[in-house]
Image 1: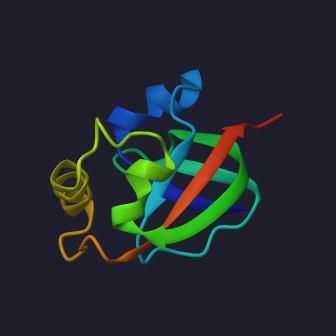
Image 2 (image 1 turned 180 degrees about the vertical axis):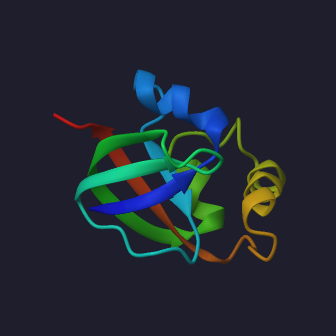
Length: 103
């Protein structure tokens, strides 16, 4: 099964269904179907979701695409992404991975 690591603070939001996407840069290719999130600090803590769609776009397009332009102006989005990917830039191509709770 395909999998991605996730920071522990985001797992509760994924489990509750409030977080239904993730933005990734230069990680393994993810395709629609089942996917396991693995807690980056505790590999025994996992959650299976169903990936419904993967969209590739430049980082500067993500906030508008997700309807979060006001909450995520370019500087905020870039700063947040650079916590995980220090070399990412606004023109970097990222994958927006959409998911739902697995059936």
